[in-house]
Amino acid sequence: MGIFRNSGIIAHGSAVKHIATYMYPINDSSQRVRFWRLGFAANMPEYIEKKSNQNLLISGATGQGKSKLMRLMLEMMPNPKTIFSYKENDEYLQIEGNFIAAEKNLPDPFVDAEAFTDAFAVAFNIQSEGIQASTAISLVNTVAKESGSWADFIDNAGKHAKKAKDINVRAATNYLLEKVKSLTYESQQIELDLDKTNILDMSNLNDDAKTFYSELFLRQIYRKLRSRDKNAGKVIICVDEAHRLTRNSSNRRQSIINEMSREIRAFGMLWTATQNISDIPDPLRNQFGTQFAFSTTSEGDLRALSQIDRDLAECASALKNHEFIDAKHEKVHKSIAIFKADIGSLKERKLDGLRPKEARNYGPLVLEKLADRPTTMLHAAMLAIYENPDAELGKLAKALKRKGWVTSDPTIYGSKDRKGVLDNLVSLGYARKAGPSYKLTVKALWWIDAGMLVERANNAGSELHKQLMRKAAEKLHEENMLVVVPEGSNAPDLIAYPMSKGDKKYLWDDKNRRAYEIQTTARKENALANKERNDRLGIPITWIAHDKDMLEEIKKLTNSEDEYLLLARPG
Image (cartoon, rainbow, N blue to C red):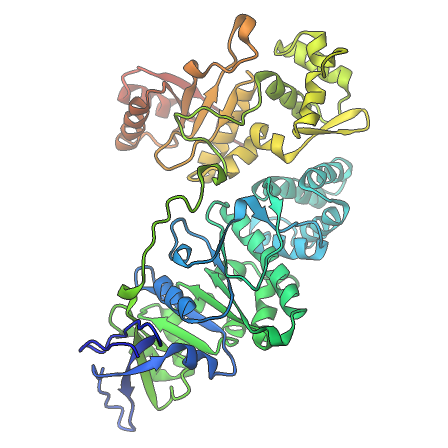
């Protein structure tokens, strides 16, 4: 048995783990005793398992203990689990199990065009972008059916863009080409083993990719669950931040989580957490047989609770920190049980080494050399292909010579003893042959597509900031500079490496790399903080702004000690 403290808080005992329960009596005269501090223990595995509907929803604001409670509940249950974790150093990473860095291990998005289309619709709020939703969704489905890889998808979407005559189709195609940049990751394809406890660390995916690939993972899981032997035991599927899968749903295209919540009970349990109970639509929320709610003053939450029982809302608004109620308690109309978990008994383990440095999603540390970067010649060849789509070798050779990046015929075309630079791209996985022309792979696009570079930025800021980052990267690429987006909030927006000069132009000039800082405001504290950081790193800085007066103000703040670049505001 667990050990009680005098306050009635739960003990996390070794044999049976308990959560303390207080009773909040309700009588006909509506005179209520607030909390009886002497409580009784609730055996939580038993509490969940005795319900015919074992789906669990936990709602609560940041800091109330929502994630710790979910972790405690997961550790209490002996069932195999697959857990979706979205935040760096998340509570769920403390759970022992099979750790999976999602950005390196993703489901194949091209095995099922309908699943791809649904996942795209769930990830992006198409209607809010001014795009005709039916046209965009139809186009996504068509291109997905034609494609077997991201490179195919980008090529095929480009072909549709070229032949489109209708203005709505052109707008949808351009929208699609822009959005898929946030979804393309170089990763191995993975099939989850549901007999193990899997912790899917999604933290290194951007927000769009988190939603898109969560949807694809859930569809893979649901397919496996439906074909699973019912005697194999139930599996717990835990999805944090479930609202990300429901916010863009339409009648035609919805997240599979809706169907799972209704049908999973025979072979599993769906557990999820969200900040506000009202974030989850009523039809989905009603599929959870246990609904733990922490203290809330949200009007939407109180309204949702009062629809179950009017006293639930009053009780929820009066809960103390870390206390919670079950809005689906079997006796909720007679008495309200108030729970409190002993989260202090949870063991913490060091997460250092759980995610090796090379598994980070993209971008080197500021002062590290880039071990996997392409050579200057390969980078130039990639840019030539990018700027001249569908071009044959002869046209690409002229483009390289015109730029002055690669001028030697043997280097471009190859010789008896060695391949030319374009064929080297193919050998190294940066390009593939498509008849007489060359097509870039996603591996190459991550280096030279400015939009894809910015989509992977951890802290790209406002839309204007992103647009200026893209324009800056494109301008730097005009000089065949290697542009990277360094990791972390304490790093400049961009770092660019020039080619070495003279007979060493096949090498990157690491000593003369520069930081590029995008400024959309001339606030003194912001500019000085950025300057101090780059001075500390020892990297010269170029300030970029879209407004001449703003740039002049930044010059004054920085004593005109740096370089300054004015870029036209994106139109």
